[in-house]
Length: 331
View 1 (cartoon, rainbow, N blue to C red):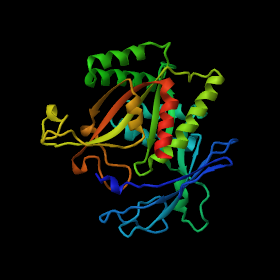
View 2: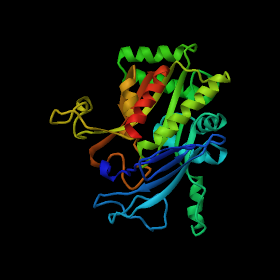
View 3: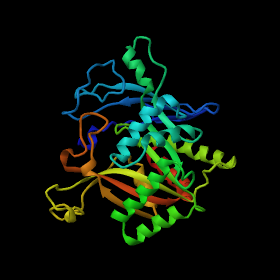
C-alpha cells in the first residue's frame, strides 16, 4: 500500500450559492433548485516513486513523478439509474465478500434518491476530449447516503444487513457492545440508520463537508414530510488499515512485535471524528477478503498494512455536532 504522501491532497474553495468561502484550488457549487455541486480539483503527487500517468489529457489520474497537475471537475447530485454499477462497485469495496445483495441495496439507494448524493465527474467536458474520456461522466467516484435498517425488513438486502451486523457483533464485539448492538437492532421504535460514506481513496476528506452538509439538510426535509428518516441511532462501517507484523499470531495482532500499538490509516479521515463520538464500536480484520485498491496500483496488503473494518454506533442527535467538527477540521 502506498504511504500517505502518495494519496491525492487538495485544498478547496467552497462556493455555496452566492456565498464564497475562499481558500484555493477547488470549487464546490450547491445550487438550491437542483442538487449539483461542481468541484474543480487539482490533483498532484510529490513522491519520487509514484505512478506515471499515461497521458496529460487523461482526467482523474494521479500525477507522475514529474509533479504534473491535473484539473478535475466533480459534481454531486441525486443518485440515478445510470449510476447503478458505479454505486455497486463502491459498496463492494466496503462489504467485500459479505453476504449482502448489493444489487438490491443499490436499487434501494437509487429509489430513495431524495436523500444522499453521488460524486461524479462534471458533464462540462471539452469538445477535444476523446469519447473514452467523455464516458467518464458516468463513473461514480463517491456515495454518501443513509439506509433505514429498521424499516422495510421484508426487503432481502435489509434482512441481510441486519443479520450481518448481528453476526459481526457476535464474532468481534465485547459482550457489552454485542448486547448494545442487538438491543438497538431489535428495538424498531428507535430507528437505526446505516450511514454509507464511500469514495475512491484519492478523493480527499474535504469533499465530505458539502456531502454531509447536504445529507443533513435532506434528512431534515424528509423528516418534515414524515418520511422514515427520523433516526435515534446511526451505524457507520469504516475502512481503516493497521501496520501490523504479519508474522505475529492472530492473538498478538493488537500490538506489533516490538510491543508498540499499530499505526492506523483511515481510508476516509473524517470518519475518525465519527469514531470519537461513538457510544460503542468494534473492529475486525478483513485481510482474508482484501481486494486490490480501486485507485492506482497499490493493494490493501502492501507495506504490512492490514485492512480492517470498524463498526461505529452513535446517537443520531450527535450528527450535527460531528459535522461541525468535520467542517472545522477539513474546510
